[in-house]
Length: 366
Image 1 (cartoon, rainbow, N blue to C red):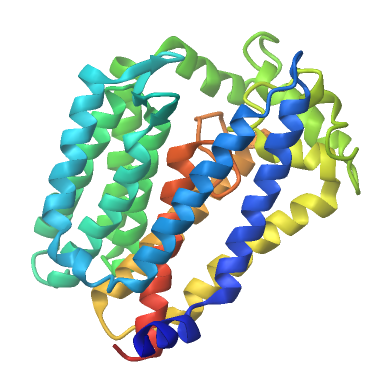
Image 2: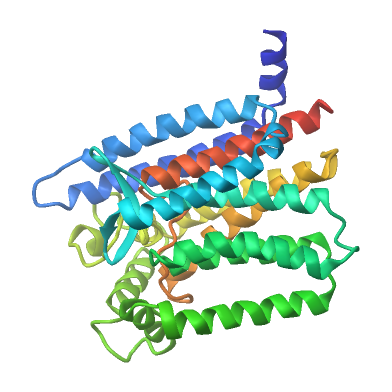
């Protein structure tokens, strides 16, 4: 009991409540989108609450377990991630051209969301166990190959957006690890080669259309419909928004994927500039609280875990908001803690739980 009280005392409640408030923003807009259906159906809203309860349970469990134990299990977790990604290619359900989900009753599990966590743990262990100053090319090849295997399996679904996210995560940790600039330049070239290979051999036509639409948004109305409607929604919210349930784009079904990929546009339309400012502020609070604790972490593994979580959440937020504002191509990345989706919300809360574990043990010099 004394240990539990000590953990609760050192739990970062500011970070937790920032995450919780982002969840409330998401719930409000999922509720709003439900109102736009011909026959009002709150099934997704209820399912999201169920997912949040599971996610919060996982978050507190991970927060009170020593995160350092994850280092010992990283190889098993990695193998489990590979098995899941292979299994979903053969046993998964296809939706919108992507075979990336397992059907479990009325729920769907998306393995790639949990693969992101596994990759953070894998890379944190590798970089904390090896000195990058000694044979840096070897370390780039080994860590890159580990990332590449997961990325390749995700591309095969095909989910190129999530695959790029895995490579961006690896690239960011390579940069933060202190590799020389020539190696970082090589990684940038590698990512360009991967992109070119994907365009030639792996991209579906609709994925190519998304990128071409981003580069030439006025080329074809049928192809840039998503981005156009999202930009209209963001702009029409103005300062205070139209109010929850009164967004023209979302309520009249002009905006596709309103509760997943384009939930930020719904927030902008219904809650205005003030609403999205709060969303960005709460994300900033989370990033600040993670950055603040890094100097106090007494082991490299914990530092890399915290940095990996920070990088992943930031990239996902940046890409999703960029998609919604038309400054990045649509690649199907959800807004962490906000977008609808069981795997997304549970994995995001698991990330918060792991970083809380890092914070607790940094504060008590565990």
